[in-house]
Each structure stands twice: as C-alpha cells, then as structure tokens.
Length: 180
Image (cartoon, rainbow, N blue to C red):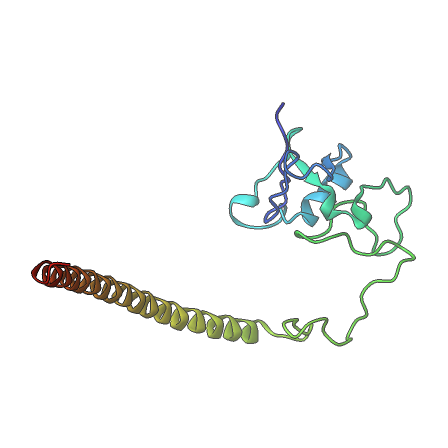
C-alpha cells in the first residue's frame, strides 16, 4: 500500500514511519486552497515552488495544524486560519486564543527580535559561515593528526612485536644452552 509524504517544504513526515500523524488533502474550495498554498510556502514564491499545483496525491501532515488536527471552522475570526501554519510550524492561534506576546523577550538566546534588519541577519549569517569554514579547516587538520598518530601507533606496535619475538628467541636459545 503506498504511503504519503507531507508536501510542506522542509517537512519529511510520512505515513509509513509516522503512523500517529494524519495526512490531509488540499481543500477543493478555492479560497481555502489558496490559503493553504500560501501557508505551506508553495504559492507566491519564486523557484521550483512557484508553480506548485497540488493534486489528490499531495498531503499536509497534522504537525502543521493547531492541536495536530485539521478543523472545519465555519466562521474565521480575525487572524484565524483554517489551514496549515505558515512554513513547517503550526497554525497561528485561532480567534479567542492568545498568541505570542509581541515585543516580549525572546524565547531562547538564539531567537531574533522582530526589529532585526536584513543587513544584520546577513552579517550574522556571514559570521556563522566564517566560523563554520574555520571549524572545517580545524577538523581537516585534526583528521590528519589522527591519521598520523594511528600510523605511528601501528609502527610502535610492530616494533614491540618484533622485540618480543627477538626476546623470546634469545631466551629460548639461552635455555637450550643451559639444558633447561
């Protein structure tokens, strides 16, 4: 029996491996369908995703819905959506539910404030790329050192085996001379 893989970019959930998840087809209603396409980053973008038209085989997994399940909301309040969350995340809060506090402290040290400019992001990205490049160089050097140390270890072990053979042969010869 064929399975389904989530069509949200960056999501690799599939129905064979992730049996606890549900996989939903795109709605037939044009407005809802357009909203789903926008929220899964498949509409209005450039590149290979810009011409995406879902078929009956395309699915969105329940990971992308508030509470893990698709709901059929009759009336949508302000800010509520009846489709998957934008990107690989979950749905924004529905009407009447509290969403994240605007302007509050970031959740984590790696969170970005909403006032971060694209220039700052680009600078931070380039800094991280520089760090990665340096780490890759260090990693290559370390691998070379490890390789040299392993060769030296193998040579030393061979020397020990050779000296053990010589010692054993010498002690055997001494025993024969003394009649032991």
